[in-house]
Image: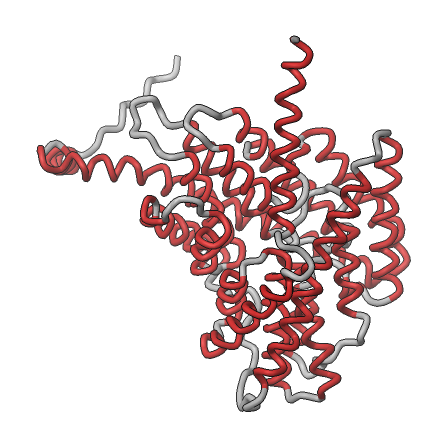
Length: 463
């Protein structure tokens, strides 16, 4: 029989110190705040670890697909539809709420998170969602899908925070589920992009329905811990790098406004097309019809990559890096169309995959094309590329400040803050001409309606 290991005890000095701090009559509030903070710390650490693991396998799949498609260009017509079908089947078979971006699911979960409700949010945020999200998006990017990992990381983080909150013992001080999920989403974005301010602004602009003063300390702490964990394992990196911005033209702000408006319209139109295709797909009741649709989407993305360049499929980070950091800055006129079309066909399959990175790359392509037509210098071109990124992301999400801060932190070009905010403001205004609501808002409503329908089925059967 194995010997029982001696129980580990807290050193006497530390135990006395804790007792002296927490057991004083006036320090009850300190004890309460400390216990409430612990779940956020644990969940933030786990989020950072999972985010790094996810980013590594995502990049591995993207590099593998890029090397394969460059060596055997024709093989995209086999690999892409097969990977799309596998990614879609995993979602349909094991966890249907793991499909798509993940941000609308988090938004829906926040709306459903009440003290008495637990099973509804569990459908949107769970351990199974984490696993399927990672594996499904892995196959999507392996097949050249025009998807990103940032939105999925936010749903993964929300699931981690919800699970930690669920595991708290009954005697533990109660922590708001809604605040826990919102904080998780912010930590997930911060870890995915290495943009702590972006995570905080995202929580305020997109997710917060209550005043931030109720959970600001937890929010800031979670973002810091998740970001530092990712940096400790991945290194202090910028998502893109330091593009050269020197000697900008006095009138370049006019180009920023033009690019932002076109990119904002492009993002909003892309969202409307996505919704229309997803509504059409919803009419397919037979399984073979859905399989055929997914295969067609995979074939179309393969055709886009085959007829243009494999650089225009995948997350889009490679094309953003090239036009920002090399002398080959000007893309052909059809580049933005290919990126937007690839994003539509990839996202509408219903498999897991985000739209953040594809939106950024589509906006970058718009900025590059217009800069080429105007024959701008490298620095002015870089500014328009960044402005296009802000504009397109704003057109999709309707979060101009979040979009501006994310692009700012990805490039560490703080001197451009006013240009980027200008781009966000104008793109946000023109986006309203196409749709008053963001793509995420529409998808959130769909998920809420879907959950209500599932809840109503047992009642109808019992009645």
